[in-house]
Length: 166
Image (cartoon, rainbow, N blue to C red; front, side, top):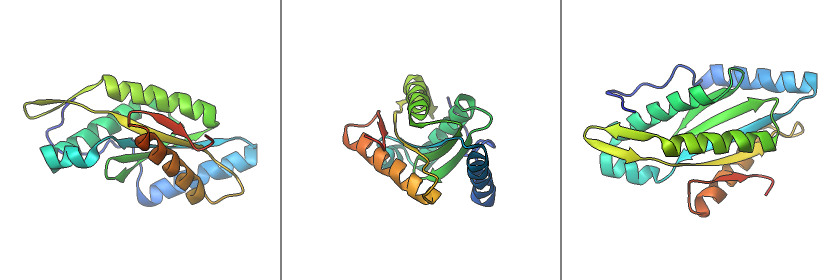
C-alpha cells in the first residue's frame, strides 16, 4: 500500500464525534444489557520507523493502517487514531474473547501487508491490547486496562495480542 500524502480514513472518528459515538454505544450496551470490547493497536517500532524514514513515511503507514482497519471492522464498530501510531477500536456486542479474535485477525492482516513509501517496501507489524468494558467503570479505566494489555504485548516481543484479563 502507498499514499502520496497524509490523510486519515474518513471511517476514523476524532474529538466530539468519537466521544458521542462511544457514549451512544455505552448507553445502548447498558439499555440492552450487552457487552463492549476496547482494543488498542500500536505500530511496533513506531519511533524507529519515524526516525529512519521520516514523518512522511510514518503518516503514510498510519493512513494505510487506517484503511485496513476500516475494511476489517464491522460497520457498528467505532475506531479512532490516537496518535504516535496507536489506534482505538470500540466493539459493540463483543466480549473479550471476540475482541481477541478480531484483534488477532487484524494483526495478521497488517503483518501480511507490504507497505510502500518512496522506493522502500516496509514490513510493518502491530501489537494489540484488548479489554472488556466494565459497566461500573468509566470508559477511561477500560481504555487504561487495554493500554496495560498493549504494553504487555509489546514487552513480550511485539506482533502479539494481549488481554487485560490475563
